[in-house]
Image (cartoon, rainbow over all chains, first blue to last red; front, side):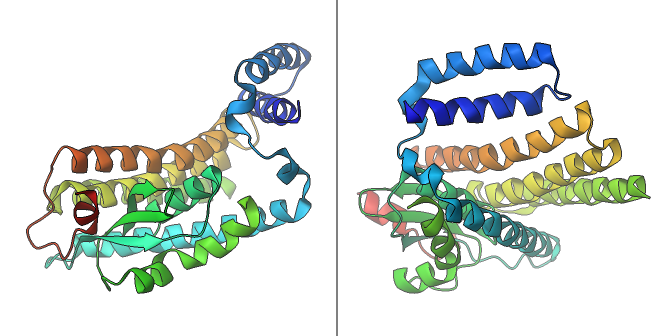
Amino acid sequence: MGKRLVLFIFSFLTWLILTWPVDLQHIIVGLAVAVFIAAVSGGLFIQRVHHFRQPTRYLWFCYYIPVFLWECLKANIDVALRVLNPRLPINPGIVKVRTTLKSDTGLTFLANSITLTPGTFCIDINAKEGILYIHWLNVLTKDTEQATQLIVTKFENILKRIFE
Amino acid sequence: MIEIIGIIFIIIGLLFNLLGCIGLNRLPDVYSRLQATTKCVTLGTCSILFGAFLIKGISTTGVKALLTIVFLLLTSPVAAHAVARGAHKSGVKLWEKSVCDQYAEDDK
């Protein structure tokens, strides 16, 4: 029941934003649509309902957004400079990094964050062993531990507090 | 005033999209090209949408632009991941000067 309620709230809020400005007709249709979505896909998306009742997770998420946006901006300037440089200073390769995150949501956010930050993007995940395969535009180290330090750690520490 | 800031955001966005396209042309292989396109084009498009939000304010158009930013940030890395994984599984080679491919080593 809790799972469906959380999904209902999410889809209803999204509907309200999508049909802004709020008025009675939109609210009525939105309620119907959100109930339908929650009834059909209830247990698929949300696994651990008790996480939604812990306010510290929301605070960490608010902290995560500016950190992520800053990294994202740095990533763009870095890639842009490499692309514009006439000598094209790239040194690409696929490296392996480890993560301690276990939940699906956490891994998804980690992979998405890595993809949108400096010169790295996620090719595949081995969730069982906690391994991410990362394509790195400028490989600084082939060693798994060092690469983990450089790429994963800064996001992992925050995401662990949000999703685990 | 707010409109000028919005236009500046749109110009920055167009610039990043242009850089993404230049990267798409200049970089050597599928994976490096995906780097340029996912990063620059995602931030560029988000910046254009944010500029549109600043110009339109909290209205029908503006709020939809904000919602689109959220969806874009969630979906564009997933698309890049799908393309890259598909390319690697179907045997697209890395650039010959690439340093290492630990994914292929583990896949055997």
